[in-house]
Image (cartoon, rainbow, N blue to C red):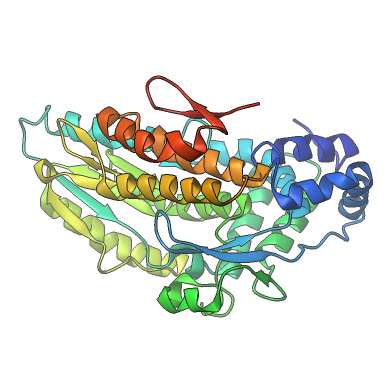
Amino acid sequence: MKYMEITIEEVFEAYYECRKTKRYSSGALEFEVNLEQNLIELFNQLKNRTWTPGKSTCFMVEKPVRREIFAAPFRDRIVHHILIRRLNSTFEKYFIFDSYACRKCKGTHAAIKRVEHFLKSQTNNGNSKTYVLKLDIKGFFMNIPKSLLWQKLSDFIDKNYKSDTNDFEKYLSKEIIFNEPTKNCMIRSPFSEWNFLPKDKSLFTTKEGCGLPIGNLTSQVFANFFLSEYDHFIKHTLKVKCYVRYVDDCVFVHKDKEFLKYIIKQSRIFLQKKLQVNLHPKKIYLQNAFNGVEFLGTFIKPNYTVCSHRVKNNFVESLKFYSELANNHKLSEEEKQNCLASVNSYLGIMGHYKTFKFRKKQITLYFEKYIKKYFDINVNCKKIIKKT
């Protein structure tokens, strides 16, 4: 597709795409009060290149792990969609098959199935000795060097993005990458929450010139792009066939344990030298494949996969939280939407594994009494649906 610099139709399309998952958020509802005026104003800012990122909202989440989230204002999310819609097809040509997250048909379940396939095939369905290696990067999002990311992305756009509007995409990318969301942000969680967060997990304490905010579409896609150079090194230089990456969780399956040790060494050198990030020294897992590997909320062995205790516990905590909330007051549309997203994310993972009795029991305990008036649940307990 050959893009003009920007059209009002493109802004409207990005808005409708953006609101699919944020329909009842306070930011989306506020934006809709003067919808046409706000979209026209945003269009003019983009056309005149006067758009700059707005004030983020910062808060802490504890599930699935403790994380600091910076949520961009709704108008900025529209811009993120405009940019990624334009660059995505070019990124897809560059990404390897086995990198996952924020890609069509490349979610958590697809990544899990791929690791399952590699373990089964390399062990000959559990009959042959094989090893599994798992690596991740220390404080990945917080330690991405902005200047290096921008340099690589700018060069990539110039070389691969076939459009007359390269400067426009580069303008948006540069504004987003070098934005400092910690400045003048709205903090929604108590300051004490940061006492339990390691310094390399927060933009407030990361190294100067480093870090992308977790919570933005552009951060996820740019992070994937940033690590794709490592993917190509693994696949094309080291010639590793059985390799899967989901964000910065990397899994390798190979019959030779010494070769996997070699991968650790070469990965450490490459990541430090080329991308200025480091392997997490306490999260290097190298085991016989028969011992299994924990990956994206599951525990995978050559012959079976089970849902992790962490996912089950988080599911129960989510049901408890929204049950208590519904007992205390009538849920707002935003709270209902958050409940829907949270509960269904866990049901979606557990629904692939033998967890029906567990799901049914927890639904009976927490769902029936208070939450049921807002939602229906299908007979397999795999999904809740908001009542109209």
